[in-house]
Image (cartoon, rainbow, N blue to C red):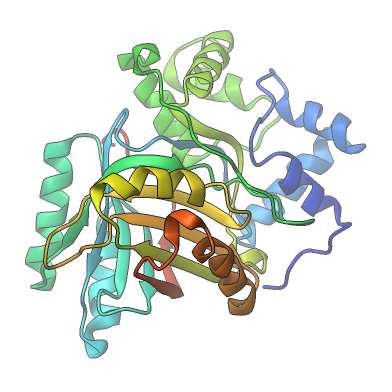
Length: 326
């Protein structure tokens, strides 16, 4: 699909509401007022963008390992088995992202589950069905896990994440978080529709979403876009090899480079995967992505640090996390 025009109302809609969805009874009416259009037009545009695959949902992204369990995992698949194994991985309900990347470890996926034990079982099923070892790299520390960058204008630093306040989380938040991960109904009063579905009040739903967002348990509430479908086709995962005492200062610096869209530390597996620091670069071309990487490499904290870049070449699956079993 082609990139949206910079002055298109669709682009304004996506730029201004990838986060901070109005937590009001009629959120799309509030959006319409800000955009100078009608509630019906906003709903129609969102439905069309969802139908054509440019957005995945209006909802939220949930912080990893809060209400559920998650890991980034990879498989080293022989070329002639990629389609077969990608189908096995994609069939797991908890796999919410799956990409082919340029590396010996060529299929990368995010696996989610309601609990650590269920996550282990999910990865074991993939190993058994594929006959291949799964490399599991759980999150150690997030430096930036937002991903809500503007689609037009100059690249800006997304900034550092802050710790989640886990004291806010309640047991009855899980159904709300799962609904936001699946996506709200595109109706005039989506929170009322969710409240009716869960047997709760609209005001309670809105209050809990606000509390979870303020606590950084929900990292973003808004329109969740599909970047590749919007012209951001150069998706690069860059991994860095550093000693333990250098990871934190490097991660803090890296997360503040314009064009770096995610940055986090993950567990290593010595001798198998020795790259603890990860960042994502979303760009419109490889040239643009490599220019962002050059800015990162110029940081004093990363000067001369071994790294490799894994461009994605195909997206097999992209959806929200599995937080609560169906």
